[in-house]
Length: 464
Image 1 (tube, rainbow, N blue to C red):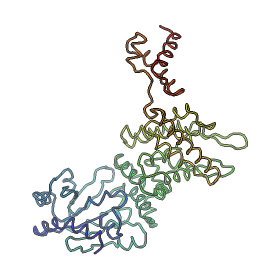
Image 2: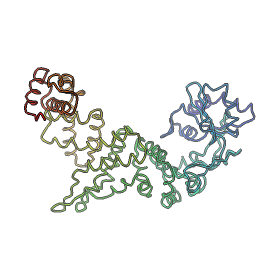
Image 3: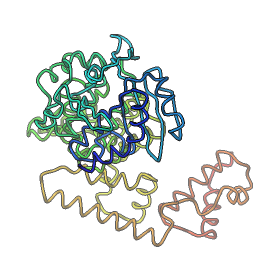
């Protein structure tokens, strides 16, 4: 028996026996079945091997009764949708009554009806590769829509017609992108056409659900096939219209690569850190608004990082990302060109200012900068790599001499108030800003020199 099946059988053996004694059927379903057949670990965005999805003909109240006394914890928040969750031995189980679920045409909330038939339940699943079930404990495969055949042939289909499936839950159109990218599947013609004609239905899906699916997509090993799909079908227009807007040539005369192709290449090159990947996705969104043509047909995008940071913030807020994550991603977009402003070399002052501006985002910023170089010009790529190596070496060098990661003025606010004889207020803030600029420009001064410089600066200020 393959190891993945053995793991699933061991994880569900006791539970299956409980349901069997009660005259109820219990099935493993969805991603665990798909990935067991592929003999791979839990698939893209599917949780981990400790999260197990099951379906049964028992109703929610019956499920809760059956797992009581066996499970170490039970949660019932999803009971009205047919799902009871529980935990045992470090594993989490979600057990759902067979159902036929559909969204009302203009509603964000699904209408759920329960069913006794496993094949009816599977028919309402998103894709055939997820519409397979394994009855436990005997591991009988239930595959009425040939999901196994689709896995073998590399095709993504829906159990029923794609229009029916996407009417049931429009988010499935975006979920398809994740399966193209994560499983190297190709869409059947009917699925592709259904997304092209029905992508407007995504408007009824909550921003939070769209955000979750986008996060799962961008953290795949290679997200670009899924991102191309959402652009080419028009789906991106419904939740991230800044992306298709990038499909413009940087230089229409010399036909340099378009910004969209460059952007998706950068996304693929970065490590699958969710916020870094989002920053890569948005880093050039300001280019269409800032594109300008000069003499000889040259093209420029002055201040596109500033414009792009503002656009990023607006889009992530619309997708209901937490404020802290909005700040992180938009700040990376704003800083992604900072490295290139030091073309004449990395003085100590320049390194301190770069580190200060990046703050806790320094490693992500450096990676984004490296990955932003997608040129086919090998000499240019090597030159940028050498400059980044030089910067990181200078940062390490200064770290050994200074508290580079915690730069602060040589005097604190209490010392400044005592020296200047003034109470807390804006003047203290200005004095501390002056001292911090000295710290960045010249490195640590020490308390004595900082005091002398502060008093000299204060004497020149307007006391009013």
